[in-house]
Length: 407
Image (cartoon, rainbow, N blue to C red; front, side, top):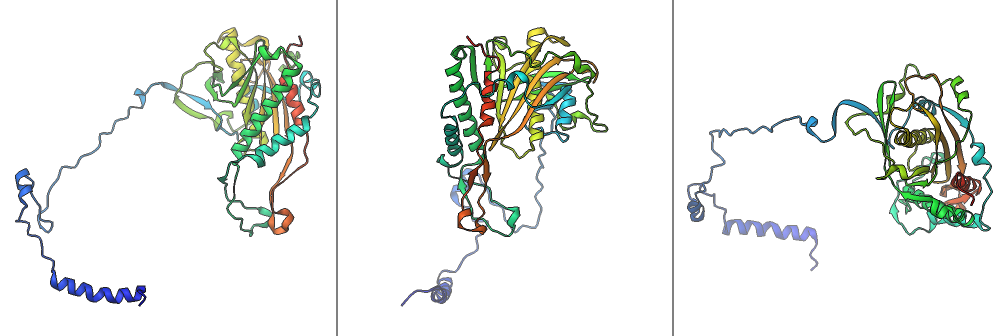
């Protein structure tokens, strides 16, 4: 006989009835306290009692000790970090940095494109791209896909390389390859430059009477024994430029207000004056527009140059005796963006007078990634990588060459 669930159910019913008759349940008498509990002085309370036991209600002690925490200040400041996204993009960054924006690369950097290269440069770049997109052994659960071109298609759950990991792999490999090529053509760069991993930036300045604190931790920071040469010598001409009007929106609308801060200037080292920041390299692991990413890079460039200027000339400096420059490279999943920033003034009390300068080179695509579209046929069941262009890497080499000694 096969014991099926319906049969077991029929057998259980009479068994429970026989068990109930043979071993009836006896109600527990509250008066019969076990001897062990009597010796310990523990009593038993009847749960069916009618009287109400009044207990003392304990209320938690509420105390606001925010002001007693370390680093608390009475006056708040505005804080800018990696997570602050500007609504107005570059227009907002222009006002906060008091900066004139130019399109393209500075002449001094542009002239270095294709000056040095590797004989198998394109083949090596393609291998780096495949390593970040295909060859890495990571098998993590990816976010569920929805393709707007066929909204009804239901994708199976995919496992592979997360976007932030692929960007980190591409970022690291590009810098490693570029450094190797630069060291071959500029032997002095081995000792004259240093590549630092995740040094913390902490800088502050006064904008229209309000303190702004800038904090970030880039993936890499390239420093040198000497400061970068100025990108432009036409500093006085910037006084005639007009910054964009944002009325009625304040440029600080997207910054965070905080009471916990320390107004220090540090580029990430104990001896900050021994290093001259040349290039900061970050990864774009977000879904922002390129304009918003470039605006963020401009703020970080401002933070590095302000920290360097105040460490070099003092915190009361306004118009700099000599401009301080820095470069920024932001690496995305398929391309690179460049920012070249020149700090000419720390006078942010008005929009008039000498202004800072920035050159933006945006949208440098290394390749094009086409996601799978299986509803079109078998040939579209895998991701495709097309339209490879090696020019962005040549620009990266030019950026890392700028300011190096030829001897």
